[in-house]
Image (cartoon, rainbow, N blue to C red):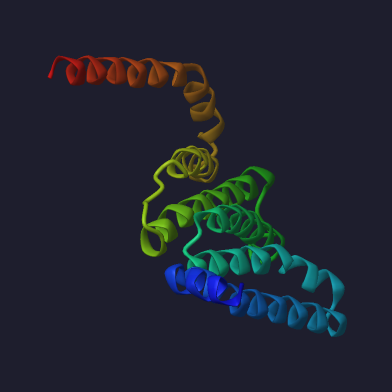
Length: 179
């Protein structure tokens, strides 16, 4: 039985790295919770989501597992957005705070693609779709007071983009079938 496990570990190096990665993650969470006892509770709580996102990103990068990068990017982006709108950008109006939050959330989606390119065998491009949409809306909210009008216009014409992408896919599919 032991020989079989040793052979599997030699074949799959990521299995060998899991115990130390899990150990490091548990130590990080323990240190965070220990320090949270001595800091103001609201300040420690503010950094919990970004820290959790960072843990998932490091864990996913170390194990080369995109399944861990996805929650890391999402939770990290949400956490960063919450920290920024409660901290340095607390003075902004509601629309601008929404723009900052959406841009941070979009950044989290972009990190998924970046980390998958750097640390896994396959680049995952699909997170750029929701991230791009959030970046456009967040940028429009921050752009100016004209942003609500732009959002209204975009909200009424976005189905045209779906139609164009659908036509492109059909034309591409027909071209591939002819070859």
